[in-house]
Image 1 (cartoon, rainbow, N blue to C red):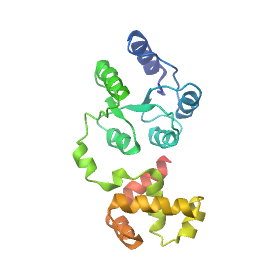
Image 2: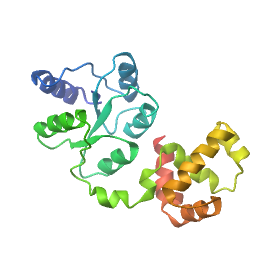
Image 3: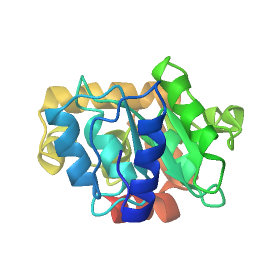
Length: 206
């Protein structure tokens, strides 16, 4: 469990320790601390504050996606913000409101441990209609770089990955956007919200 507020972290720890369904492995006050802990002591489910210093929840989720034994994450955030949408787009397994009943958080963790996804404040159907939400952070960066007209070799150098990896990401990107080639992907990029608000936000977060 990770939360930047020591009082919240202490209170939440006590709640989980009193519930026999859970065994609290460790707590952390930062995203980096949480990451280091789960790498040393694997856990089944993790609960994180969306605004964890210094990496932040979105970046932490992105890093953990590369680790096979990473816990399924429940984001604990403000329902009035866009955290629930961002959490799902970043690969979280569930979301619980900070101002909601503590039982809601506990039940969300139980459901996530059972393999379910829990996003009570989000119309998943609407999210699924937006192909941008299906892109990984790497694919979003790839799409932005692609919009500059870079060749595969230039993309390889720009992103510091092999040409084969570039081809792999491009193939996935085209499939997720339902486009056939680079030109169509670039057209999609400029016709979406990516060039402005969303891509700028991604760069700020990462």
